[in-house]
Image (cartoon, rainbow, N blue to C red):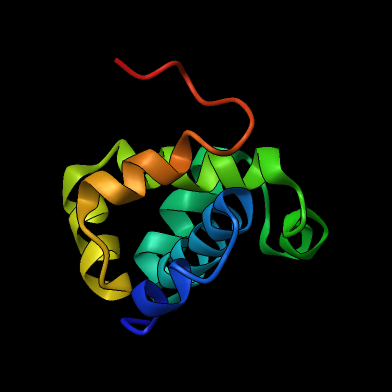
Length: 101
């Protein structure tokens, strides 16, 4: 996943944010405890995930979940090769983000 940081610079802002959210989701689903915690927080079961993957609002929710837990945010940042503040800034590019500042 660390090569993700290299690919960010070649994508448009929204596309990069969506790709980051999908990468973060993959990170969440790699470990059973993280996956269970995420799915419980959304009220979804795993079968519903494929239909949401192209939904920018859902992808924003993935990043909201990550950002809400500092340890998880730092782990995703490390896994993607991005700084944590860049992950937070990418969240702003997706629908439903709270105004920054």
